[in-house]
Image 1 (spheres, rainbow, N blue to C red):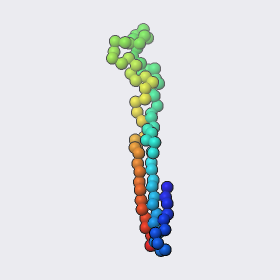
Image 2 (image 1 turned 45 degrees about the vertical axis):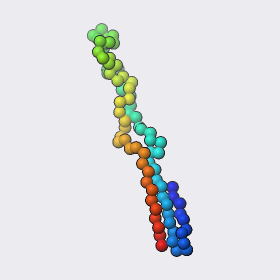
Image 3 (image 1 turned 30 degrees about the vertical axis):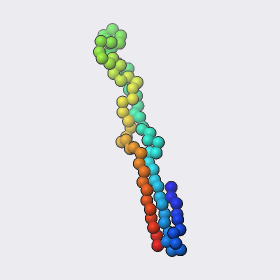
Image 4 (image 1 turned 120 degrees about the vertical axis):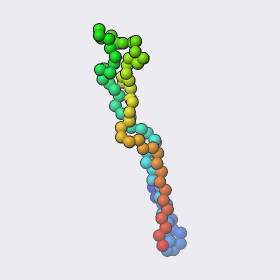
Length: 80
């Protein structure tokens, strides 16, 4: 966004504001949907003797791309 101001007859000012990722929303990675990540016994039953038999099954453990947080930039330009 920007706004032009007339300061004097021959002097103009421009105020500018820019924003990136205003909502601060991350782009989540794809969930681990592979059933091979489950820990199973030889008979095919779920192994409950381990601490986490699901091994992040259907869990989102990453984000896509580089994380860029909220960014704002302001500027003032004077022309005479």
